[in-house]
Length: 194
Image (cartoon, rainbow, N blue to C red; front, top):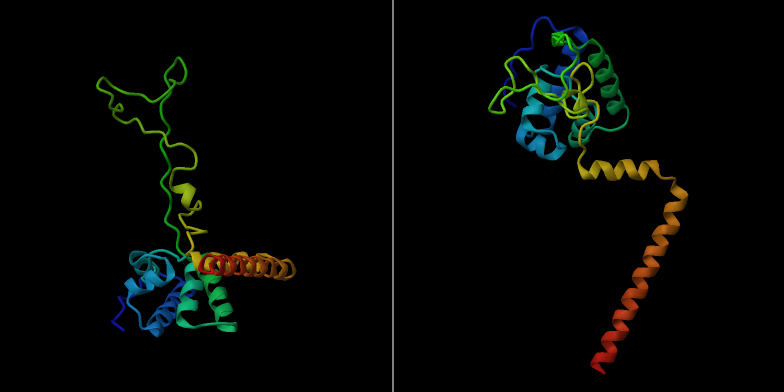
């Protein structure tokens, strides 16, 4: 495929090795980043970040890339181990501390602080309800643990969670119901024609 941009020199060896292997795997698919994004449910820009070592990929993205590249078994497990080593060593950008908001002498002011006209006062931060910020979608270090999965991966997960025993009788029941419906439709068709 095309030439990859050089990886940053300061990358730990584990991260460098993992990203290089990920790039080889992506090249093995023969797909563009757009096509890869369509097949894996991770956007082109996400794959650019993952393959340029700007951001660690979620484990499910690596699994999806392995599936698209036709990798299975032990090789997929090796990618899982490489991913774990890389994520542990991935450089973390320090999160700047949030400056404390001064509290008036009379105690905290209830509700958001605003100036006439409804605009927030200069320096006043808008409050974000719990579960609606960056931390809701990402972990403390900015890494997204569980992204949205494509529907076909959700089917695999659901089937792997269910025990094999109860599934067979349910399928048999569905088949019997379908046979009854088809039989009734055939009888109804014969009656209306006859």
